[in-house]
Image (cartoon, rainbow, N blue to C red):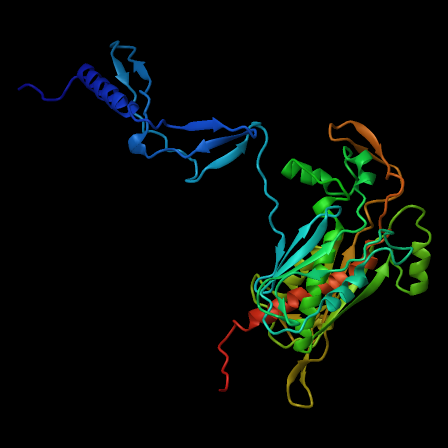
Length: 441
């Protein structure tokens, strides 16, 4: 009985003929497997790959059997393109990559987005989620900005910025409309010329090293987006948040806790007057009173967790602690636990506040009590070893006429208060989504 099974030679010939016909048929399509075209702006555009049915499948490589001399065709599945279904633009330089500077927003329901650079034309903030009907004026915003403004003390930057904000939208007849509130703050005393001589140097303690590595470009004019000038936008937004919190009877206060380890005014002044061109760090304390029980959400949206995120997003911040903070690691549970009792009205309340106003990430009704540590200002009037962008050894010195804070913690006080207010007002609005509320008609 003869076998119907084809010989290896016949299989090879059939497979080769089928593949050849298939390749010729697909090759007649006007769409090729992949296209790239260069544009005049230095980019090349990658066109998404066509469907498999229209792709040209190149003839697979062949191998020759060492024993029989028969040529076989390797059977392999065509590789699918990994290109996304939209057009992608990439740098023409193979080693470069595209990076976008995201994460310019803070908050969930009461959400702010800041914009602008230190020595650009202006800086500003857009507030989304502010309820309608809140009385608000530009004067209230500017009053808060005046607390942060530079040039008002020998121990702060001499840069003269009036910081007069203008509300462009979201306000009608003195009240918020519920629409986004856009606030602009012009830069009146920008002087980028001071940074031209050092634009190619890696500034010790500054972000130009990481920005250049990540984005391939850095605005060297005063630090650009990384400058603490951006915090004026937070203070402006914080003014709106404070006004909304006042409606609920909540107040936010912040003050200097210590500078260079000194805690009294006399000691602090002595530290500041003996820096000799150097800088010093400090700690800012903040207290929020009037919060109800229940703000904050476990597990990843704890009140103190979001507070920590907000505080550590402030330029030059290096530490955050709430309640007894790191001291809790040195005491016993019997000393740290907050016992419970009842007040005159019969309400259950903690007898102490070692926890700092939260339990399980939720407010207890007691004051929020926390502290934020700030490093010494990176810009100092002393020579420091560094390298240039090419890696060559250099000595970094600030150009004559440079303007910097000897202690950033001083002007960070209203910034800490603003971030606390922004976090708390967002938690307030989020809390209305936590359970059903009954309203009388």
